[in-house]
Image (cartoon, rainbow, N blue to C red; front, side, top):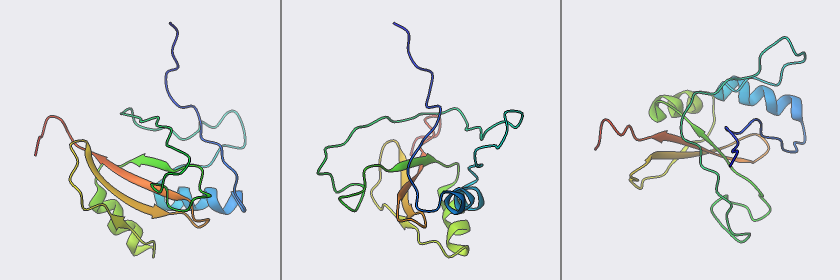
Length: 126
């Protein structure tokens, strides 16, 4: 069976797309979509990606009207949190210990939840 090789894009509605794209670039390093075909788009590092539909009544994303949540992998969750907090962005750590790594939650300027995930390195258990 032919299979897809990864996620090619994430498309969602925004009240102010330009400002929101700039916020993601400035604070998380996600480059905005190029304005021409000669400029390469943002490149993500290879790694695990979870594709998980949730029940319609989940509270995991926060507000009930929130239809999606972005999960972004980070190398160093503590360093990322310090950087975001220095920019005035609230970061909430999940205090639970998980076999697959550590998590924290932020919200973009339009209130969309963004989960930050530091995957556990299988070569360094514990």
